Length: 158
Image (cartoon, rainbow, N blue to C red; front, side, top):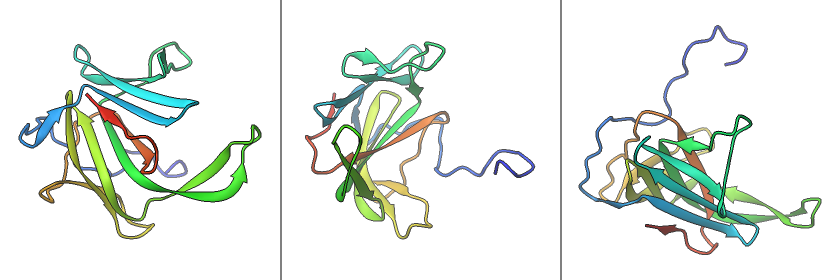
C-alpha cells in the first residue's frame, strides 16, 4: 500500500455505529495478565468513548504523552507455541497459532461481547462471531487486536 497511489484500504472488519446490547454484558475494564512482567489492562473512558491502555497501574503513553486509546478492544485466546528461543533477558519467545478458531471477546461502548474468532487459512481475514454465529460488528474507530495465550491466567472483564 505504501508504494501505491494512496487511498483508504478496504476495511478488515464489519462496523456499525449502534450496538445491539442483546447478548452483551458490562465490559468497562479488562485485565490481561500475560505474565508477572507483562500486566496489561484496558479501562473504558465514558467521556471519550474509548478504552485506555495501561501496563499494571502505569498508563501506556505515546511519544506526545497521550495515553494509548482504542474504540474497540478485541481479545483472541490463542494457542501458545514454544519456539525454543529466548530474548536477550532470557525470556522465552513464543509463537501463536492464529489459524483455526478459538474463544474471543470484543469490548466496545463499555460492553463485552463473547464469541469466537475464526480463520480458515493464513491468507484469510480473521472474523469474529457471537455465540449465535452472527458476525460481531465493531464501532467505527481505532481497533486494537490482542493475541492472549489461552494457557495464561484468565483474562478478567468487569
